[in-house]
Image (cartoon, rainbow, N blue to C red; front, side, top):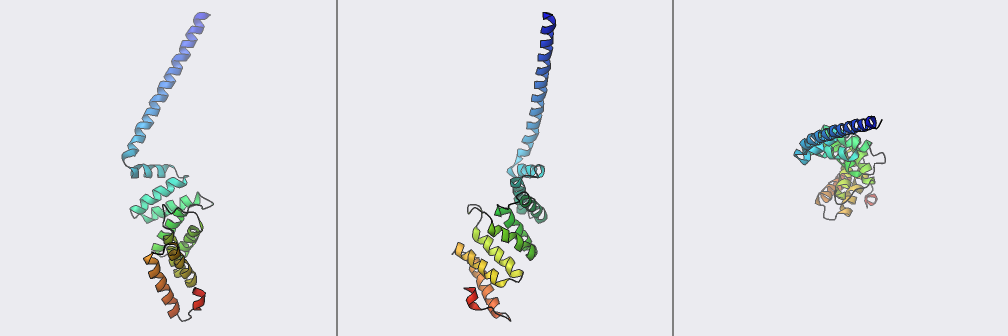
Length: 191
């Protein structure tokens, strides 16, 4: 009986050892394959973005890569995925970048929706110049025919950064165009 138990134990130990060796070999293979993705930061970002479709951060990161390479359709899709994964829309960055792309394309009504959410959300001044968000929102509002709201948001851009030259320029143009329009608004409403 003792002989059979010793043999059974050795067989079990051999099986466990083989299983561990196989597991270690498989893990080594996975590591070897993963290291191939480490050619560059961009490469690993793209690989992770394509694999992790349910991660807000990886979708945002791959969208930034697409944006850097002027692949606007792919970037917009990835920003929209990032936004969809954040139902509370707490992060203004993907909202802002999606709005920028839409603004660039002339899709002003859609851009206005994203940029409105961006100015209402959370953004870190370390990663995004707040005045740019207000400015671009003002431009989208201008293009959808909401001139007074555009002026208010261009003013918000300047309040946020008093040295924002682009904001002063576009605010001046908006004020001039409103004053020169067929139905100029009450100028006190602009103060």
